[in-house]
Length: 422
Image: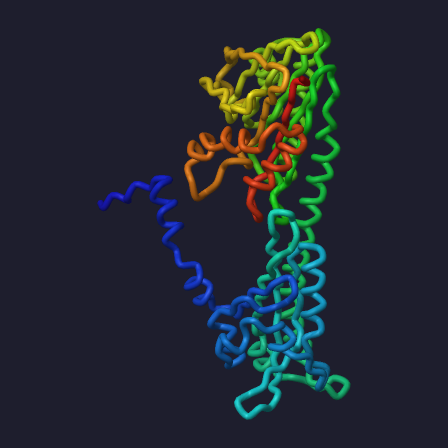
């Protein structure tokens, strides 16, 4: 038996870098256009060039309506498509329309009847604005011709049986898309209600950010939290429940509540909080596999260093930026994830935060990318933080999101930064 070759991160990255995406786009069988937000054609694949019988030079660089002008003979035209493109550009949401009629000219310059199902897919930039629209057309004219046209009010239209078949496809996709959008909206509303604003403890400035993934249905279980324990210590938490749906968001809400309740009521250190939270969640039947990091910052007099204790359950290491501008990872042996059932005995790790120091907690969406090893991204993170200079925690988090999280990311990101006042 032939042994399959080993697949490593380096080999996957090399393969990805070697792919000729222009050749792939050209080879796609369905007609496709890539347009700017102003509906200028940026690229066209071979299928659409064959459909309109034009070279790329006659399409690329022109406005969509110059390539496909409105044609009102017998009710045909591109108005419905343009209206859809305008909605996609405004809302940033994928839209499918059809079946609709748009005729094309034949070799003799005569209009020939054509029927289409069209999908318009937005591509957003780092700010969330739609920068590019991918326009896909599915020709269903053969279905219409197979069943024969009928005359309706003087205009040619597909027979009811044809429309039933084609409409059923469009209706099913639209219902599916609408259901996914509703699911995502529900998850985001759930997360917004759970991720409460941080407290304002004396001498500390805490800021938080949560950015959902860009795709319409991709919602995860990332969370942040901050609260003051009865003895005056401030606890900060960032965690990530596995999964990317409403169920993951719900499990996140339950687990966050358990960690918060245990941390407040016991007043314990981070490792004990994680152990007790895992035991409590298991006893309550909460099935949630998650990574989490808990940090505990001691109270202190103005201008004095604060004690810092943290523990990790399989989570990425925090970053501390010192008042002198240097930054480093707080690396230590990571203990097991929450929910594995391996028992307690997680370890606390100690350090200090001096006035002007900033502690950064984050989820893997900030640094994990398919095209590079995670360890490489982690080693670069302190340098990125240091390069941003002495800025407020909120501005630091915004800058990191802008610089490190690309458009179209497929993972949520939760961030928390706490700075000791000078």
